[in-house]
Image (cartoon, rainbow, N blue to C red; front, side):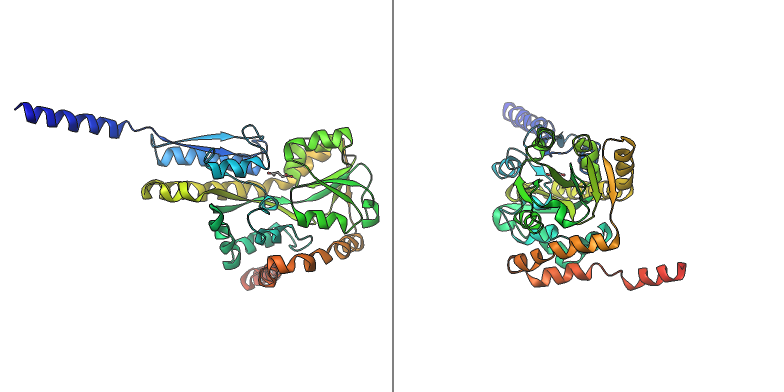
Length: 339
Ligand code: SIN
């Protein structure tokens, strides 16, 4: 009897230990404001992950470079100090040269073309391009097309000559500004406002949501609607941590992630122009519209960068991206019917 009681006691203890197991803590760190597509997607992931896995996971979101800024967030991920980050595609240069494709100037006609490329077979392959480096891509997330800004009006490439531009840590972006005679400086996102305000740099490039939420428009006199490139993200996790999760938890987290990305993408696609309107309404910076001829000048000046990086990126990828500028046949038909 004593033995039975003892065994029952042990079983009861281990059962309560199992049911009271601590939740898996998932730290999701990023550098932008909460009211951006990425900020909103991160919060949606928390909501959904905790809903699908009640008591089993706890997601902590750290926006605005609160926990780790550029440069440090990837190291932190590899060290296991955070579990999810979503850097701009321009910031993966240390881990793969393939993602440089997204920085090529004037490669994508618009964000819809970017979306088609990311969802193509070639685009999806890129999610696994850093597995050898311990990183797994969980999905692409949109922000938007980039606009140039400066304290002088930028209408033609000649206007950029001699100006200092803040860039993300990307060799392609460095080459892009050199191609127009600019002087690019790699600066972390958290330091951009200060760098613009103090005159460390004269100009920069970013999508409307970042320009608005980080108030760059307060410290830039002109914003040129150039749509010359894209700033999107890859949501990444630590491969070892991800593959070590129990299968049911990994599956539910994957579902929460896909849905949170779809949510963030919808915000990016529908609200990009609202952020633009807010910048205009603030009446601090003048927004410059380019004529077709002016835009062509920027394109011609920057396009040699493609050939420079083609050996590292691969012609096949560049061709697939160009292809994504074409509307699928069904969409073309629907468009011509509407006319
Ligand atoms: C971000 O959107 O995550 C930051 C972009 C930048 O560094 O310009």
